[in-house]
Length: 127
Image (cartoon, rainbow, N blue to C red; front, side, top):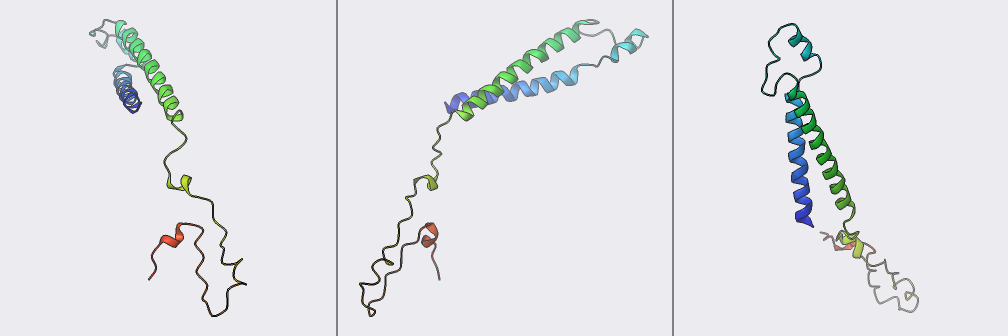
């Protein structure tokens, strides 16, 4: 499944770059006004109005592919297992220290054993 997510992510990135390029190539609605007064910009590779239709349709198709890829990535990102392998998920519940309950039966001359820490703080070495 990791390979599928990588493929969808690559498709999304390529469509995003394609959309950026196509949007930058397109000319706005006001650019046709200059061609009407003889600025000479109307002759192009696709014809007078053919480029607008081709570029806008291609941009719409790429936007659709980008949208579907985004939805697929959101689905696969949410569909992962709930266990993340975190260290904190597998920790046992804090045990009640037994030293407090058995302190009355131990003579005063015997030193009491230190209670086990309730968290991982006891694993940090001290000086």
